[in-house]
Image 1 (tube, one colour):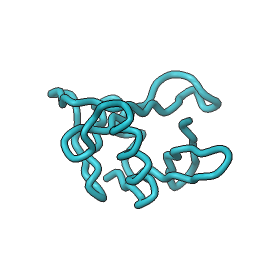
Image 2 (spheres, rainbow, N blue to C red; image 1 turned 120 degrees about the vertical axis):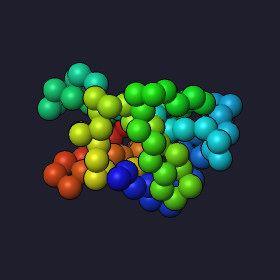
Image 3 (tube, rainbow, N blue to C red; image 1 turned 30 degrees about the vertical axis):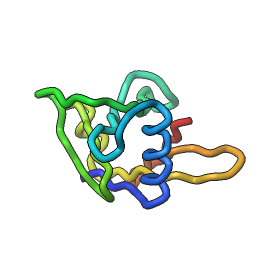
Length: 101
């Protein structure tokens, strides 16, 4: 399961609308790619199509797609948003935190 806090829901919905996506129909795509301090970094984007390789999660009315290779890294994570000077969407895991600007 991937959780979405209320503040992340609001920010993701705003960003989706700004980029021409419909938050009630389209998806937030979260993945893991090579890079970052631990050798992996998170990737967040928007998509209007689900592939056979995707796993769909929904929390707080946000539809999240995760590809099969990223699934093990993302189970149990939470999308969070912290406003302020350095406004970021965070992906929080029980053991570590990464930020996506």
